[in-house]
Image (cartoon, rainbow, N blue to C red):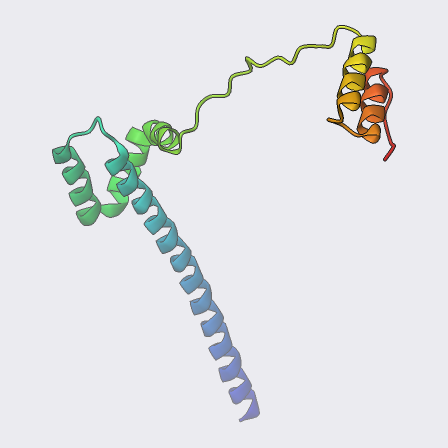
Length: 142
């Protein structure tokens, strides 16, 4: 009798864990699918080159044949999705046009820092740091 009860408890636990595993797996798939569908719908409304009729066809296809439509949309228009997302975020390609000008000489840097110190723009500690940097040293002062 005790062996049968242990077997039943063990079997119930195994079935519960198996069901829980499948529940987690299908929940993950469902949430991932919802994420993809939301991305597709937002991309459809973000695309100004596609007219309204085609947008409606994509959405109707998403309703009736969702998985296949999402797969086809990502394969066919995936590259454009990334470009439209970058445009909507205002992301532009980086340009490395800025090149800081190297100082002409350490003595000029120190003279410029001295003028700033005399004008009261910087403190003595900042002057010492600029002087040390101009001379090529690492400054660890206060």
